[in-house]
Length: 294
Image 1 (tube, rainbow, N blue to C red):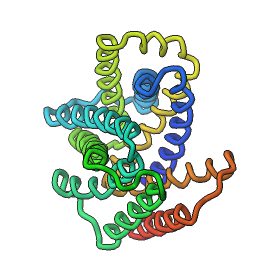
Image 2: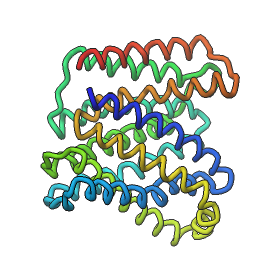
Image 3: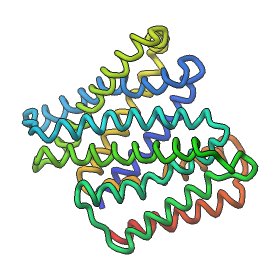
Image 4: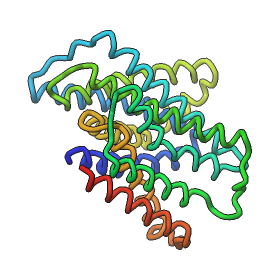
């Protein structure tokens, strides 16, 4: 059950990172605030890797040919997923698009079965479906453009698919290393992934919008915290991926929605609606069943 502990730590760290990124959006814009997680995250990932090797005495692992397609696919999939999620935010029927994005755990389970041969007990499969249904119920708020459009549906499903493929690809990269030490395998993979993402997005912004890079440089102090929390969260996501299927990790990760609800309720004093409460109950039931299944 160590994977569950890692996932909960990652979800909590990601909640903190998201809060900081929302603060940075006002000065850097959405794309700039998103890039911060990669640009300021990879130096911390390098430090984590160097510290691990210093403590254990391990060397950098040999990278088999299969490692590169997996890790590049994971890095590109996460970038594409983020772009689609940002596109969804601009949709009139954003709640519909967001609800479809949250079908990610179900898609992860399907892709994990197809590409990695991950199998699930009937109880675990039911847990994934119930928890995902709970998040969708919470996402679809009355009177918020819920009829949706074909575009919002495609954007949402596409975002969920890219997030799912990214998770599966990263788990595939970790497993392809064939290391007995899962901590080294996870830490090395997350470092390579963040370096690829930071390099690609920096090159893109340098060509398309260099002003964003300048704004990021000026906001380096708050960006450091966001980068650290991003790298910290990624480290624990990958540790969990190294131990169990990506579907288990991404389903338990839905507790992040509960963390966000807690922040909304107790920090911003916004009441919880009956619909949100019903969704919370479903998420809790799904997560409980998943933990019980293992």
